Image (cartoon, rainbow, N blue to C red):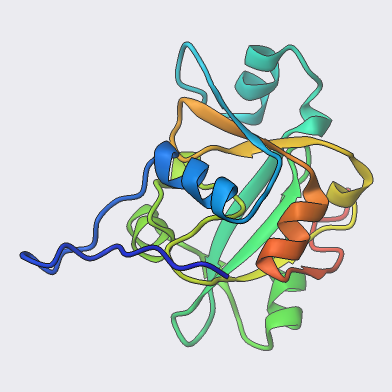
Length: 171
């Protein structure tokens, strides 16, 4: 997986990644995906689906958790479902907790509200729910709260070397 150069040589502070960085990642890896820029901010699956004129089942959520060692773990789940921390903990082999917004940005380079499923500044262990792979095209975080990434979920699985496992809560 590609790493981004995220350190400013003069200040040694981590730089934030933007939609343009995600676009470059897509090009560098030959991924046929598109960043869809929206007229207004979207903060929920319902808002994203409405902005695109599609059903919420075509929206995915990329949720970051932290394991017991402080390492990030991503869960890619359908937008109309919730990631199950207990199922994820069993897969990871340690307790996990939801990452704080600052941790999301620190580990991925992107804000929590725009976290894409791919293109992070360093490789992140990823689990993808099989229900996501049932779709030919999905929309997820696009690098900001005003953009979405249209992508084939098989590309997420391939690029992230994601493990496929049922990781959503039972309804």
